Length: 382
Image (cartoon, rainbow, N blue to C red; front, side, top):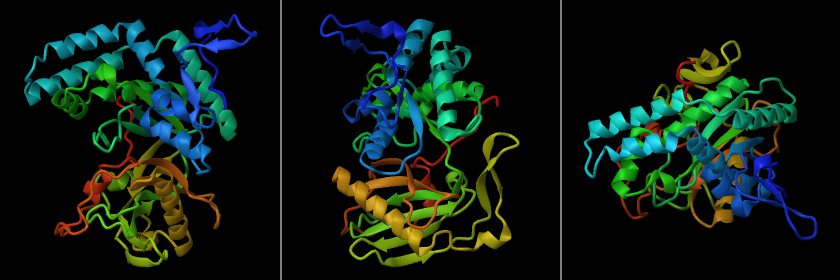
């Protein structure tokens, strides 16, 4: 498979056999075209895994990654590199929390005030227009997701540190969201974590995923082991109607489902009272929270067929990677029984207790949801 067309400034004719050698600096790569061996290095952890899953037959959304090379080029050509280094240098070896927070705000402000260059803007505009064409839609709503190269590693626990924006529609808002995702490499949490671990931001470049927003009937996260007890004999699903943002914000508790791995039997289904749902508001072009219709508030979100489809996908992904995973999934309004569920993210499970340990007294679905990736936020200033 081929990479998305590279910047013309980085393409040179080879002197042998009339072939073309492509040097580094692709601005955009498509999920369904990028070489899996290069996917994470080019598109970051989130998008790299999506590319790998897509090419192994898993249902994933259409989309592309704004590459780590595009980020590096933007920072280099705009002068951001030097200004960021100057802010970090002023922190010294043992900065206070207040100093780190101020540095984070200063750096993120630099990203907000620094426009994307004309050439890169043209490349991203072309890619977004192509995505609209593939989706057969105008100004197709997308999720714009930070995708750092070191993110989601089981030994790093970066999950949830970087930003995601849901329901972004139109190229101007997409460009704003890309800049904000780049800036989220320097959130207070991310900056403090790297300083504490001695990780340079130069060693952890960031890509940004731009993927078609699936119009969700329901969504959630599923674990191939119990996320609290560590039991490997069951799959655990957390789910709500619509998108999962209402869960992440603590506005609603999700339904909780446990399935036996050996036989696919539903061992437990706790139906939550769901007062709020995250839905796409076409008038404002964003995902927003609205009151849950009364008839859905106490209704079970998933039926047996959907539970089986989610469990099947999670089991297949765990077998593919050879280790426990958590999986972010969406069931489209257009899905029919027998169709696969759409997988929008997967990563190693990072929080499990040993199977012989007692589970904590309180099971907090909101705390768990905040670690995972079905969250999004409005674009500042929009």
